Amino acid sequence: MRQLEHAEQCALLKWWRLQYPAKSRLLFAIPNGGARNAITGAMLKAEGVLAGVPDLFLAVPAGGRHGLFIELKRRQGGKVSQAQKDMLEALQGAGYMTAICRGWLEAKAVIQSYLAGHCPGR
Picture: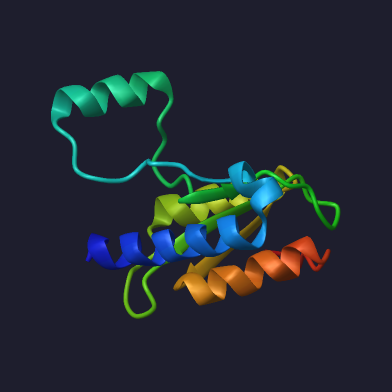
């Protein structure tokens, strides 16, 4: 299952880097997920890793928002956890736009809309 999300995320980043080369570094992954042993997990938690943090961050202000966080899911399936829902809500309250996207094409459309200044409530 993770391989499908991996492929979607790789496709999105490839598109971004080709479409916006001058801003290529401003869309980046937050590698919060994945299986880890207990020691590594404890170390990361002590360093500030939090459950529910979205997969990607676009560090470009637009439409009155500070930036865009994207939780990227595969096109079919993939559940949003309660921790993810809670984090997205907290980020919205802090002035960021957030989106749950099913596949890279949906994420691409959200990014384009966001950069055009269209920042709906979520």
